[in-house]
Amino acid sequence: MSGTPPAPGGIEFALLTGERLGRHLPALAALRIEVFRDFPYLYDGDAAYEEKYLRTYAEAPGSAIVGAFAGPDLVGAATAIPLRHEAAGIVRPFRERGMDIGRIFYFGESVLRKAWRGRGIGVAFFRHREAHARASGDYTHACFCGVIRPAGHPRRPPDHVPLDDFWRRRGFRPLEGAIGHIAWRDLDEEAETEKPMQFWIKTL
Image (cartoon, rainbow, N blue to C red):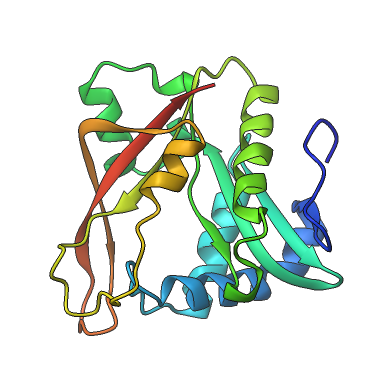
């Protein structure tokens, strides 16, 4: 991927599109299910749904899926898409603030296997996606959202450390009062419920 930073040791980054994306869809789906099963998302995922979701996401104009490979193995991935292509529940907080949806890029997910964390790959994911957004048109901001869980949630691990400080070091800040909602089924739920999501934003 030209114009982007060098990769952390042992990792190759690749923009997954077309036939290469198709080959890696099962691995991408499995990776999302594995990572999002942990707190704070507690996502009870389904492989068929995940593959369909990823294919739709990847085919939206201007979108990108960045894969992190250790040799032939996919160990992480991050997604980015122009905000105007996202679902109404994601777009609504920005429309309510009178922001120009056509100039905002949305960073959907960043997932990485535990064994590869703490090596700078998460930082590189943000850099690759920001470089893609800057190269894709007249985008002024990047944004993403994170799930809001109560401090006393019964599944919160004692050693859980929120990613807020990591996101702030990347230059993002919470967009005050901007709360969206995404529905999924938690591990202890029988059906999907909407989860509140705090939006974060950065000027590109």
